[in-house]
Length: 408
Image (cartoon, rainbow, N blue to C red; front, side, top):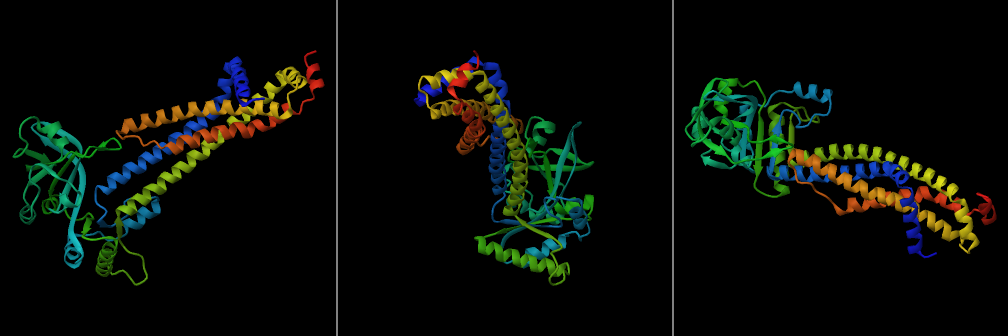
C-alpha cells in the first residue's frame, strides 16, 4: 500500500468520526500547548531579563547587606542579623577601590508624593549620590542631575520620573516646580528619561533626592547598597571585586575562613538566579505536560483499539484482497500518528496564543523559537506512533478468515 493511499484512508477515518477524534486529541493538545507555552515564556523571560540586566552594565557590581533574591525564611533571618552597610563604608570603598571607575550608593523607600492637591502612590523615593544616575544608566531628559554640591549642602532639589510629571505635575515645564515628599518640600531640577515597564510595573514612578538629604529626613538606620563600575574586562572586574571584598571583610571584622557578612553581586549573579528559578518552573510544568501527553497517548491507544474492533471486517476484506501485514500496520500507525500530530498543531497554536496573551499583559515582546515548535510536533507524532503500535500490530495480525466472519 502506497503511503499516500494510507494517508488518505487515515484522513477519511478521522473525518468519519469527527467528534470522537476531537475528544481523543484533548490530552495531546493540552500537553503540547503546555510545552510550547512554557518554552516560549521561558525564552521570552530570559531574553527580557537579560536585556534589562545588561542595561545596568556588565561592568557594575554591587555590595549589599543581603542578597537580591531570598529563597527561604532562614536566609532572611541570617541576613537580618548582619550589620548594615553605612555611608562610611561607601566612602571607604570609594577611596580604596583603585580599579573602580565610579562608585555610588543609594537608599530608597516607597511613599506618596503630593503636588497642588494631586498625589501619587507607592512612589520610589531614592536617596542618591550623584554618580548613581550614571551607574544606573539613567539619563536626564530635562533639566539636570543631582550634583556634588547638592550632596554636600543637603539641598532639597529632586529629579523625578515621568510618572510624576504625567500624573501630578500637569502641563507646563516641570523644572522649578515644587512637590512634597512625606510633607517635605523639594524643588524639581531634572526629569529622567522614560524607562517603561518591567512585568507590568512602571519604572518611572520615582523621585531622587541627595542621599545626605534623605538621611537627614529618614535617618541612617537602614542599609545602603554600594555600586561600583570597573573600567576594564573580566580580569579587572575580578580584581576590583577582590579589592572591595578584602576591604569590607576588614571593616566588618569577618574571621578568616568565615563567609562574607555582605553580598557582592554582579549582573551575572542576578541572571543566574533568574535562570535557576525559570528552569525549576519549566521542569515542573514540563513534567505536568508529559503526564498530559501520556494520558493523551493512552486515550489514543484505546480509541485505536476500538477502531480495530469496529473495522475488523474491513481489515479482513483488505487482507483477502492481498494486503500484507505491514500494509495494515502502516495504515493504523499513520492514522494514530496523524491524529496525534493534528493535536500537536492545535496545541502549538494554543500554546503560542497563550504565551502571546500573557506577554501582552506584561508589555513584553514574545520570543518564539522554531525548535520549540519542532519539538512540539515531534512529541505529538512520537506519542501517536508509540501508543499506536499495539493497536496497529493487533490489526495487522488478524486472521483474514476470522476477520471476515466478524460481522457475519
